[in-house]
Length: 351
Image (tube, rainbow, N blue to C red; front, side, top):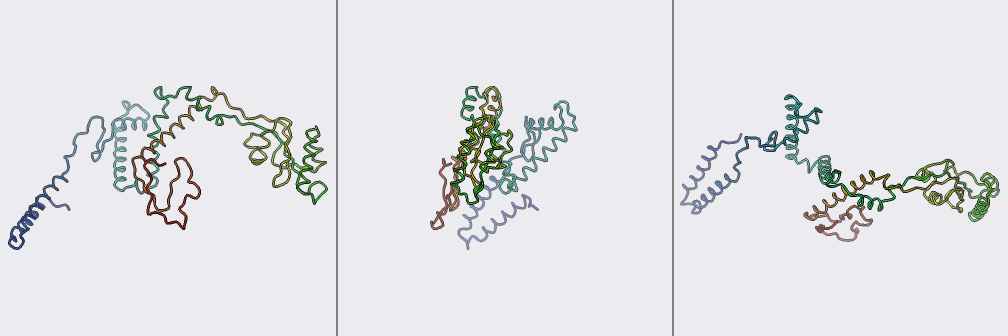
């Protein structure tokens, strides 16, 4: 139990009296007692608490350990929970919400005492997200004061046209001549490519796919279903190499022979609809959303640059930070044979 102020004071006076009683033996006792007394008086003034606030200031709904709960937050939370305007809520409803806010404030204060922002990953993530949201909020609000102009949106659209391109479609036949193909189990890659080149010549001259398959031993690779499919699906089925070839073909065109792991391929494009860039007016709302998100990301990076410029950051020996917005470069670790410094101090403006 804490001791009462009179008891503490009497103990201090008793110790000072003992010091005076032994003056002949301790010549420094009196000056020492003065120093002690001065320190005690100063400490009492230093640690003396200011009188608590006993009146809730205007604009607040409550005080919890001298921490205020804003009236605006109280009103907003009440309306959110009840689905009614604050004026329409009952006294009981307001009392319930206020108790929730007080309980929440108590838990927040306890979390700070327990240093949860330092020790709890989930709390740290929530705090980071909240700070980011606070920085981005003004840019995500599309009010008249901060709405981008059409010129700004069009410039963003022009710089990111690939984001507003419609997906193309293709109907393509993928023929493959496996090595050791038609009537020749010892066929070499060179011989297969020669046969494929002849097949391409005949296809371009109007010969049918069925004839080419029967005469040269080509088979359907199974990578394409010979029906119209979106470009992303065609790329997934054909593979990156063959898709890149197919994407350059127009209606009725035949590719040059292409060697892949399973043989020599010949692509025959039946129908091709290339991707098209959507008109700005058709995607303006999407451009506005993308522009706002890009600006919010820029604001978050600017905020981090400012914080870094005001911070002193020390990296442990052998640790290296990647540039802002980039992956850590390969080989950034300190070589095993090189003695790394005890620590590395990141320059204030380094990213």
